[in-house]
Amino acid sequence: MGIRPGPGPLSCPHPPRHALRHDVALIPRCEDNPPIRRGRGTPMLGRVTVGLLFLLLVWGNLVAGLKAGLACPDWPLCHGKVLPPFRWDIYMEFGHRVIAAVASIFLVALAARRYRRYGGAARTVPVLAIVLLLAEIGMGGAVVLLETPVRLTTVHFMIGLLVFLLAFYMMMFDGERERPAFACRGPAALFLSVAALVFSQSALGAFVRHLEAGLACPDFPTCLGKWVPPLLAGPVLAHFSHRTLGYLVLLTAVMLYLFVRREPMQRGNRPLALSFLLLVAAQIGVGALVVLSGLHYLVTALHLAVALGLLSILGHLWANAARAEGAALSLPRN
Image 1 (cartoon, rainbow, N blue to C red):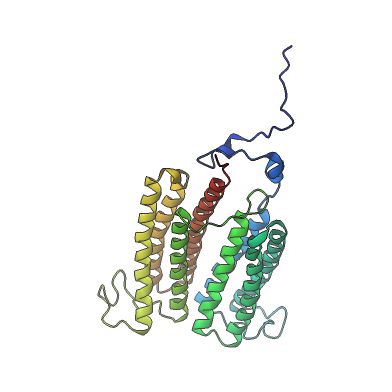
Image 2: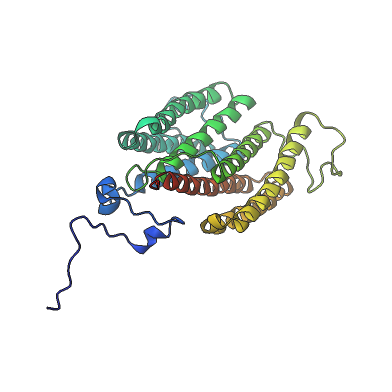
């Protein structure tokens, strides 16, 4: 009669792009994945939270570069007031506190939402994010009141970086479109190990910064005129170790790219792996510019921004591997 039959009551149409996400096309039952079918679960809250945390970390780097960390010598008020007297260095530090407060509100909202949608062990992620946030707030006050001790400010940065990564996880896995997943074997273990290496490099960079050892090697690519400085101790040792670890990250990035290029199952990750390699090379160039510019505050802020970009790319690579592993586990057995 020229009438096209409609879909059956048990059918569940999937756009072609869904099949491209896995090497084996998986077609789950509709009732098992209603959010996917209905298109809910927009990750906007996660994106805004991660963006605010990114801004917070970079702004904190600017504050340190401008030597404005103690422009507000008290905490939680600034010069004993909610709105401090207008002066550029005071408002750089005060702006950092305002951004931290806004980012904290969004993080709490994100964690609460994910806690409701996650299940089982995955709920550890939002809980840990809130615990680390509280520790970060208390430590931020201690950093000011104790006049920015080196080790405490380094730990303060490391916890902030961990909060950023946990928020990134909650952005990638919203509990509706993307169920929370975790993987630490196979390619996922490789990406996780490289992320740990980049995290360690970033933490060492923060230690060098707060130790005021950024110009302990005032030349580049040599250090004190030699490839291996004559005195490996104190600030020189910290600075030289940071450089050496940077070269190790570059070598690791090359190996990771070659692995992704040669592994057929990693075809979809090739653009990310290439971006990671190019960004690591750019990061070494920015690091050289940090030294040659005499620690210009804008260049040092860019140095941190690139490091956060590297961790974000590795987060995407790891999340893709975790999804693939979860998809493989969901395949029916013969």
